[in-house]
Structures are given as structure tokens and as C-alpha cells.
Amino acid sequence: MKKQYSLNLPKGFLEPESALKGWLEVCVIVGSKSYDLSFYDQTRLMQSIDSELTAEQPFFVDKNIVVIPEVNLKNMHNAIEGMLRKKTFTILLSEVFRE
Image (tube, rainbow, N blue to C red; front, side, top):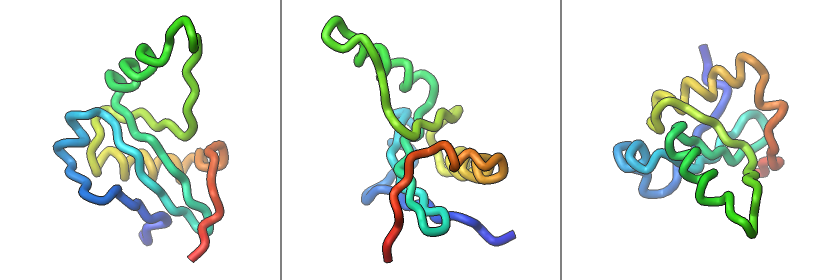
């Protein structure tokens, strides 16, 4: 089966480092659209939410968050492929990709 997407990792990407940090921002290209996705593990996402919730800012908002068990290539690819199968990309914010 031909891959329906391209996963663009940040420059200097190191998988063990991303797993330890618990998050990674990547660009996924599907057809003519690009999606900036933020992959988080559950623990790191809760830490980020907790740090954002303050008296001055009693809310947390972010776009295109994908929660996976551990931030690594296998889980990111599995999540993207699952999102394509379930047509989840239709609810994500995208930008038109121009070559």
C-alpha cells in the first residue's frame, strides 16, 4: 500500500530526546494540504495544560493536538495512518501546501 502522506520532522530530530520531552511538533502533508501537528504523550500534555491554567489565563487552547502513548516515530506513523483511515484530518486546521 502506497503511503498517502509525508511526515516532515524538525531539523535535528532525535527520537530518544522527543520521547523524554513527551512532545514534538511536526508537519504532515496530505495531498495538497499541510498540517502542523503537536504530538504529546498524556503526561506531558497534562503538564502543559496545568502550566497554562492560571488566574490570568483560566483556559487552555491549542490546535491540532494528537495524544499518543509515547512520542516516537512508530506511534506518530500509526496515529497518522489511523487518522487517515477514519478521515480525522477533516477536523484539523490546515494550510494549502505550495511547492
